[in-house]
Amino acid sequence: MKRLLIFILVCGMSLTANAQQAPLFSLIDDNITMINPAAYRSEFMFNNYSFFVNTTYRSQWSGFEFAPKTTLVQVSSWLPDWTNWENFGRTRVGVDFVMDDIDPLKTYGFYGQFAHQVPLRDDNKRFSFLSAGMNLGVITFNLNTANLTTDDIYLSGIDASSATLDAGIGIMYGQYKKKDDYRNGGRRGYYVGLSIPQVAGLDFNVTDDGRGVEINRVQHYYAIAGAQFGSFSKMLLRPTVMLNYAPNSPLHFDGRIEVQPIEQFWFGIGGSTTNRSLSFRIGSLIPYFGRFAGDSRESAIRIGGSYTHFFTDLYKLGGTYEITIAWMVDNYDY
Image 1: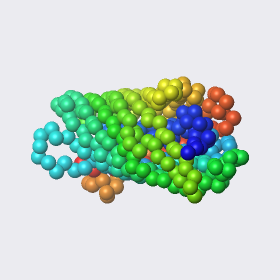
Image 2 (image 1 turned 120 degrees about the vertical axis):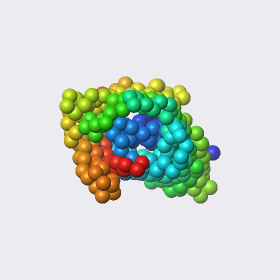
Image 3 (image 1 turned 135 degrees about the horizontal axis):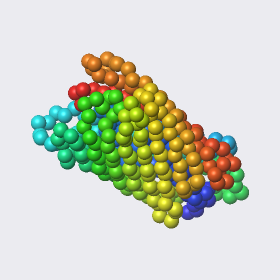
Image 4 (image 1 turned 30 degrees about the vertical axis):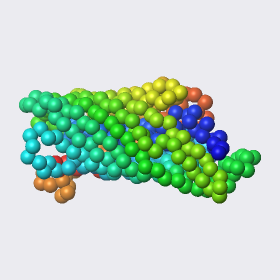
């Protein structure tokens, strides 16, 4: 059984290899649950939102033909607390749909997520918690080598799909200071988390007319940390740091910081040491009152866009663009 040579190139590029498994987005905090199923959006933790729908589109190395493209749709919500058990905690559930288009391979994944948050400290001043979560889903690979230039008859003309179960796990610790007017600037706090987005379904085959292609996914390990501090009256800051390790590849470091001087506007800058890139992002938070949120509770739409420039030879392939739109609801009952 022969292996598709193009995968040597794919696995040698950090961003592309990660996009095959748990996409690395420039707007990390908006897509954090895809990286760590135990994690929460900052708005869940610091601003008390309880439900969100998020859509992200990423165009990587947009200057060349067949450039990688990623689409992600997420829905997540706290579940109502139907128990009378003291300190039972809260449960978050969600679904993710992700599509990676990296010619000649298209990847489709559909996942369900479950995370449970157990309070460690809950008094008048401070709240801390430990969260554990997992995702479970189906991932489908479609291999079409029609656009692949090769003299190998074995590789040409393949058009086949294969599906397998996929699962990931994660843990997260968080803490924030309680604040009655959290809506006007958010709570101050931090979080740290560890995750393995793939613990099953790593290796499998795609077959077409008697020809087999072996697909070997590499297991990745993530560590992520973030915080929020400040206020709208001064300056609201949200730093995020992420480490990604995969066997036989350099440690990937990614650091970002967002600055929100007023509620309706934010901007940020970030970079990666592995691929020597610098990213710029800008966006808006538009709060409003909605019927779905209940009496006197707020909803909000968060819009963000980013551009990433590479300082290695990857700059010849063009920059990377990303846009995300999230609808968030604060439901008092949750």
